[in-house]
Image (tube, rainbow over all chains, first blue to last red; front, top):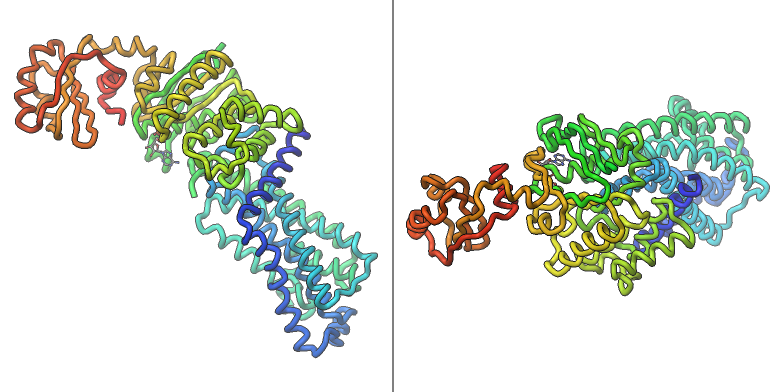
Length: 275
Length: 316
Ligand SMILES: Nc1ncnc2c1ncn2[C@@H]1O[C@H](COP(=O)(O)OP(=O)(O)O)[C@@H](O)[C@H]1O
Ligand SMILES: [Mg+2]
């Protein structure tokens, strides 16, 4: 049984890679885009500061290297794209291909498809981030403590649980709302605004700072910058782990509930195959 | 052993405004090849989707080999091979092999066993040359073969085939029909439920046929028994160029029912009457005013005549 589900998850992942590679220009673009996206922020920072070291940033967070600071922030946010777009849109794509009914008639529980698409979008995003980091490193050099890599990965792993929960919710909502991209857009915008990606938490207005404390990405971004470049953070590590586990639990529970409710709804209304 | 047991099935859409399946009860035995025959919109696809757990019915109950489709849906899905929804149900950007490999994994086949089964199905469906071709480059008929291969991967007991020859050219249709009858039913002893709106298909293939019309099963019997439901052994058939006014014929005394088949500018009228020779002169007299008669004669009833006789509805 477990073997069956794992095989299905892996098959889902491989299938997605193959389909994506069949649209080669798009596939290549997906790896270039993150670089193009983060460059302006880096250059803007350099222009304002007049170099890569900002005394002001150093005073606020304990380290003044703006390039590493910004790049690490965007790496974590890449995984938000995974949830909002990659994972969130996978079922919608099946609707659009015309395959969703056929795959939903197969003898695997729905969570297997979710796990498959989560696996694929995480791997794809991981690849995109890897290339992003390498290119930025070649251009500017990124400095970080190698000893922080392992704890950072663990923290990102914990953050991903909550993001997967969001991804499930988006995936389900995209099945019933023709304008489902609005859901992705809103979720992505809200989280991007309050998460301290390219700036310290302390520069946010107070009420946004309070909202930020409920975002898994806040703990992800601050946590890995803490481990990799010594950013001073407002929480202890056990606190961050606890918070991320809690968010993960709540979001996954919420995501699964929404998903199952919508799965029932589309099978009652007969709109599963519609797009 | 009973393969499919449907009791009082009801399914509506649009908050009850569209009644797609309206109280259907049906029992299909293991090994049977059962056909649901009915025009577009009769509710055939909806019924198939309820059986395959893709739709949740409003009422009634369905059991597949004794398993309730709602309570044991995973078990039921494992027993079913489904072909439905036209040619978009495959990944067009993937090769035939990759499509089959993905679906094999969903059905719990992996490793060498999966590979062997896929190659076997590719061979059975005569797709060896197309094995590595992307589905988007195949013809409609080929795609249907791939869809059948996919449905057979996990060797299901029951096959649900929704309009299996829709949109195929006559040659491909024949291949698919022969495969369903000879291979699936006779050799592999599968239970098969197929839907169609081609009466020849139902007549040629099926052990039993259910006439479906407006969400209901109007009759259910063997093709021979169904044909006996028409009280007369002979029908009057008239071919003509042009489009006659059907009511002109209907109100001739002695005419019981009229089936009108229009194809381009050609019309065929099939008239049921206890005395076909007796009404011939009057019928021809009236038709001559509107159309050019091409031929006429007496024939035996087809399933389509029975369908219209029992439901008042035409098949196409
Ligand atoms: N998802 C749906 N939403 C609304 N109406 C539907 C839906 N599916 C089918 N119908 C309606 O239900 C009726 C039966 O359709 P269907 O089962 O597709 O018939 P058939 O397969 O015999 O052509 C039709 O009137 C059709 O318009
Ligand atoms: Mg149909």
